[in-house]
Length: 227
Ligand SMILES: [Zn+2]
Image 1 (spheres, rainbow, N blue to C red):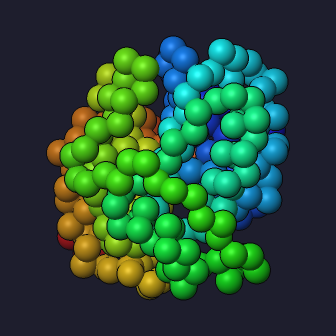
Image 2: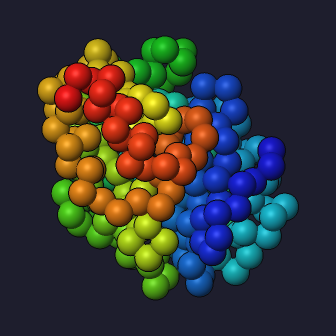
């Protein structure tokens, strides 16, 4: 597992097998983890962070889930337990719809059955709405609610470096599927339009590689969607 460093604050770990990508954003003694994979390989991600020294002097972590799906949230409880054993405070955050689905262990929406496991619920400390912000050290990340792939799907925007964490809303050349529980083709079209006004240097999706040319990528997606 080789971490991809996106200076100055962000570490990308490519998801193993079906896992989502797992991101770490570090500033001072605080860090943000974006998505945790299925939980099958959580210790590989943690090992990669440890080896790279990215967890040194860490005091507080917010784990943010981009949406409800098991391949993005299955590692939540494992990472929480591991970090708490290292005396790191762990808080959870997501859009309020995602948080509600996960707290209620709604396995139908979470898609746990695809993975032959049940989701182990954690308590959500920050249930966010559109335009709410998360503070990590001196960084402020803005939540942009982008329903369509699921009802609670959201992107996180870091305006200093112009990074956009897109979850399963935008990939390289395509969008997330909309035929799963709470998905909506019409809503993902609205969400894509909403993202158009953002100034994005790098988009960091839930699966696959980084998106370097945001405008061109969106143009291709709009063409594909017939917009
Ligand atoms: Zn998904």
